[in-house]
Length: 173
Ligand SMILES: [Zn+2]
Image (cartoon, rainbow, N blue to C red; front, side, top):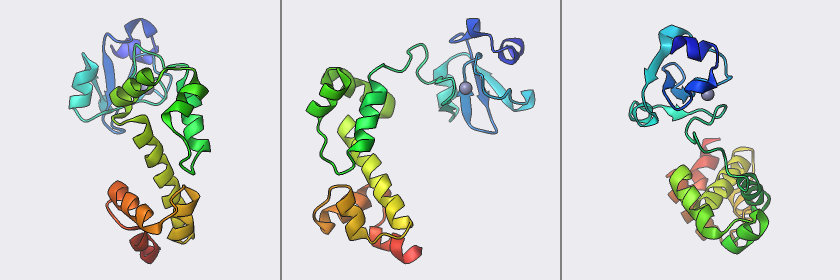
C-alpha cells in the first residue's frame, strides 16, 4: 500500500484509502497531492472506515466521490448559485442552466452535500453576507445584497445558519 501510494498508482483506487492523520483527510492511492509522511498515514479498507475515523474527503483526488466523477452539470449549477446571490434563483432555473433534471440534482445534493440545492444556495448567500459584514458592511445592506428585503428575515436566517445574530458580528469586529 505504501508503494501504491508513493507511486500514485491508480490501479489501487477504491481498493484502499490512505488517511492522513495530520490533515484529517483521506485520499485515493493515486492522489497527486504531496506524499504524506508514512508515520502520519493510516490505511483503510473502505471509505466508510475512513469516514468513521473522522476523516474528510480530499478536494484534489475527490476521494469522497470515487468511483463517480463529478457530474458534468455541477459546475454550471454552482456558478448559477454564486452569480445569483440576490436569491432570485429557483429549481426551474437550475434545471434550465444545467440541462439536468431536478430530481437528479436534488438527489446528488442530498447524497453528497447533505442538503437540498436551495438550502445550499441559501447557505452560500449567507456566507457571502457574513463576509460583507466582516469587511465593514452594516447588516441591513449585507442582507439586502443577498436578497432579503426585510432585516428581520435576514437576522432570522443568519441566526439559523451561524447560531448568532449579524449584530453580534458587528459588535465583535
Ligand atoms: Zn487526495
